Length: 121
Figure 1 (cartoon, rainbow, N blue to C red):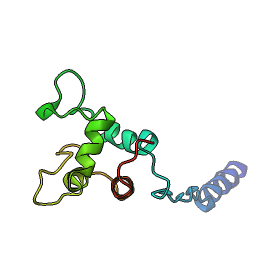
Figure 2 (figure 1 turned 180 degrees about the vertical axis):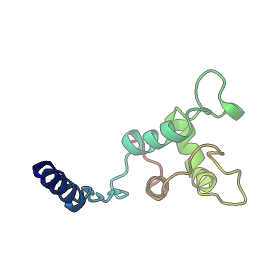
Figure 3 (figure 1 turned 45 degrees about the vertical axis):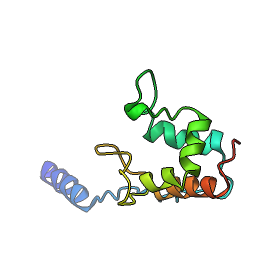
């Protein structure tokens, strides 16, 4: 009888036990598109999204994006850089699949940098 009572208590304990998973609150990503720097922001975007194809000894299309003078001339030439990464249908979209599209924040940073005259900061 004692073992039945213990078994019953264990079963009741297991049934009544609820595990509520801890859900971590989502931390909002803050996009600082006001204080944009070529050396900190634009270079990081290009490195993460463009350098796989457009750097090294044989960059695709002969377009080497590891240098400020190339990046700034692409950006200032009628906003060419912004048009190709923004998906403007009049331009070839970059980066091509399977690479991920640039985020809204990355696009905003390129626009701010371009609108500011592409400073080498």
